[in-house]
Image (cartoon, rainbow, N blue to C red; front, side, top):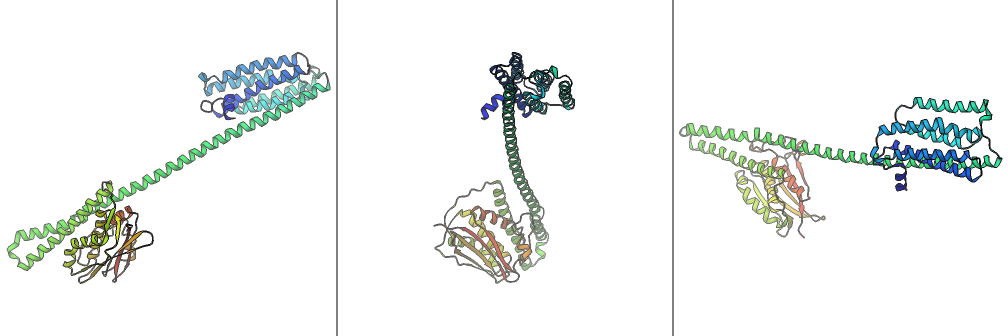
Length: 447
């Protein structure tokens, strides 16, 4: 059906909607005049009743094929040819057909009224003058018929008039049916295109929204870097420079205990700065996607013991006991470097917020969803509900000093979150002020 419609009205890729309806109207004119001429000839009507429609069909054929010429398609041509066609039908074809087919008592002229309405509807440009001419022509021929009925060619028999009426009404019904279907088909096509455009706009909108969110994350990352460089990285260097200058200028003036105290402060600042730089390096690599993710079978208890050895000195300086209570039979399917980084950051964080003589316990238990829940529990100062909700938000500054004024940036927790989520797990906090905090995360179990 679509192929036939495309052949009659022209390709929808080449012709506009109005142009295609106009072509369909001209094609209907060809069919109508041919049927009219043939039917008049078959019922034995006078010679003029079939020669005139056949002559008009030749005119319609010429206009139709001229309109479909692919090498001349333009809206300007439609503008010109529609006016030529309308003028011909309205001032020559329609009046003569009226008088040759029994005037208002005939049937075909009513079909041509419908034919003319479709034609003027598809006509591009201003139509006011043509609508006026349309009504003036109809009124004129009705007045001529009323005052000069002798100019109307009457039907020779009642049967001829009956055949003409039946034929014209059948054609009118078919024409209305075809035109409505053409309009419906074109409406459906236009609606489908509109729906597709809407979906494309929605997809584009979603992409823009995602791009905007990504841009916001990039800006947050940039702001976080600037904050670290401008403040958190600058502060320990200022402290180290201050105490080192003091020792350099007046070393002999200080007692051994004072010298040891100042050197200890410098050493502590160096340790903190090293941890910060280490986290900055890891985080920058995660943002660039240059860290490879290589999960493998790992013994969680062994990994925890290795990290406890690395962080042992910081814990001993505050007389904090680190306990590894992870069962040696628990294995995880994870990237060793990432899990080590997670454990190191969470244990260092616990040491920071646990007072002297405190205790940090590392535990793990299997869950029903093929994950292992790991917990780092301390009996430190705890975290308020407000800060707890902001700990993993890069745009928030949640840096707080530890129990011995240790500094931090919150960057380690952001790295932990990214690495845990890389494994498909979750990270969360349970905490009470002055009671302690427990950082929990899940990691896939190795079966």
